[in-house]
Image (cartoon, rainbow, N blue to C red; front, side, top):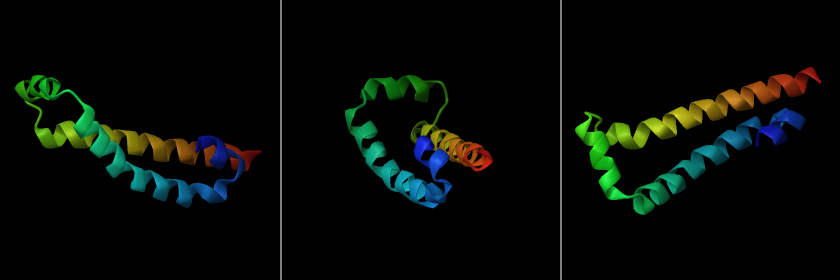
Length: 78
């Protein structure tokens, strides 16, 4: 998507909407295919289940938006 936005920055809203729609699918696959004993290691460290599931997706989404903005800025520069 970064390459698409680099050449055509007008596709930023479409890419963000597609990313928001793909997050529930990835969350479903992540929660069903992951090993359940791995989660208890993090819970014993004091991380709640909500934090265990939400933080990776939030950080990845913020990085995705940053990448889109960077690709658009560089694309507009050329």
